[in-house]
Image (cartoon, rainbow, N blue to C red; front, top):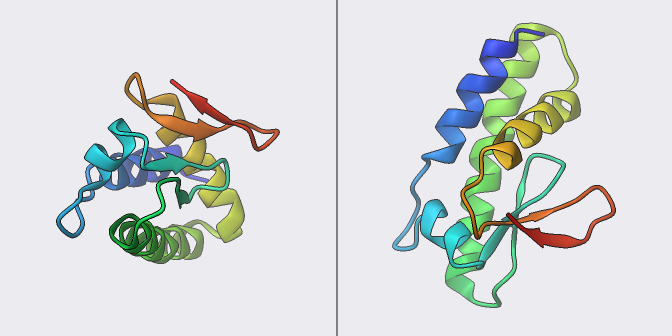
Length: 106
């Protein structure tokens, strides 16, 4: 698998804005967390946060599928590699799930 593809998608997903609430703000305020499977989860219980999580995850699914096809790797492998990059570069205060499924703060 081309590592640069994963790094590129991680950078793109990092900066992806959506709706009135953007991903960066939602992460930094603890409303959305990064999961180890390459997708986000709504932590705060609001429709705006849930809608943002759905939009981000839909875009990620599309991008992971594109990278998967280009590199001949399963989508879940691409997603998990992207998750490692995204979680590893989260700013302080951001929420993420560890391998046991527990929520942690960076």
